[in-house]
Length: 496
Image (cartoon, rainbow, N blue to C red; front, side, top):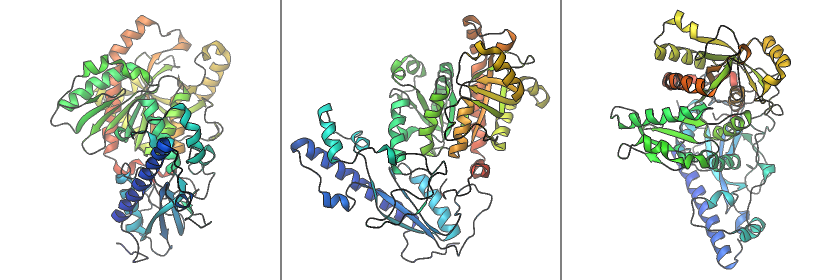
């Protein structure tokens, strides 16, 4: 049922079309002005800038509180109170499907009214240089920063998603001091900041990143993923059509050669190389090799979150902490001991990170399906429990203190990334889960040595990766139910 509160409201399609029109016009205007400045020193017109010449478009949504026919069990697409909600939008063509879904829910279930106008947020010039034919040298940057909008870090942050900001910054209409409630977790400035960083860190364009994400901390998972992806692309019955690889390789059925891709060392230029198995319906799989440590884990999640993925899962290696475990066993994390410290300032370690039932069930069922073991037998290889994530790779050198803390937490495994990824999922409302594979048992004398490592890798990686992929297949079938209400705050923005 659709009861619009205002006959002058834009439809969902009209609103998104206008977002694209305003964004494209501002982008072109800024690039043209930069070209003129480089060519002959011409300065942008101050009066035109004050009218939004270089501004991001703003999407405003109004609800008067009178009509509501919403699903109470859904984790998003809900208003917490009547009022006007706003955000600034970048790359509306990239986010068109996401915007359509969110806006359609608010229109059909609340009778929401949409308005699109220029905002007070200007596009920083560094974000528009890439993808253009503009060529700058070092001597030009000072002048550009003086006369053109640039990145002001005081205006870029996670205040909304962390619950610190309760108004949508920079969204007051031009000439007005009135601020609105936040419509989304990330505004245009924060989103553009991360889109630029994603290309830098992963070596791939943000457009290719898929909504189902696997993280790993070992490069051999990448080798296995690329080989498997090549098979999928060549299979006419597969839902996948291409593989976008770190370093610029783009594999389709016409040029599929996984071995050549694996021998290409272009990915080494990037800190966290990513590989995107692109689905025909846009619901594919991204694998990111985040390397080792909580700093990388935090960084990549900070930036991937702006794309609003459906899930991210950690499938990496860990140290087993129980005598009953064997090398090659699995650990399904249902709790985390956060000794990573990288998020303490924004998410104190005493805040519990809950497990998500849909994720836990999918990982467990996927383990059974891929391993071929029935429920009773799978418990011999799959241990559920607390995972410790440490920022100290040599925690063993403080054995007495570490072992006591591990014992008190009833931990079953230790690594350097999983709790960080889970905490970031909790923080950014991205469903998360962890399935690790035991590569050594440091408390019981089974340490990782080169020869043992190679033998272990050969036997475990393929099965572990396939479990992660199978879990994604199961989660994809969950649809809207995958997003959990337990991640909502008290004053949650309407958009997912």
